Length: 98
Image (tube, rainbow, N blue to C red):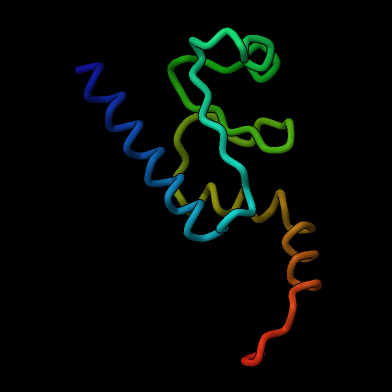
């Protein structure tokens, strides 16, 4: 049954990534890295990545380990990047409906 659990995990992460794209458009660049790839060896050590759970890293800091609920991930991203979102909001071009 280990395979089913990992498949369910991949599907859960996939749903989170779709929500991320839908809600934040291109505000975040997502890289999915396979821990078996030696090119990322030093990052795996630096962030203490395990092969058994996803590790969410934002701007060089681990923000979550495991699979969060969407509401939890969204809150973490908004809280962590609030200054960035405020900057976008303040510099946004006003459209005809504004």
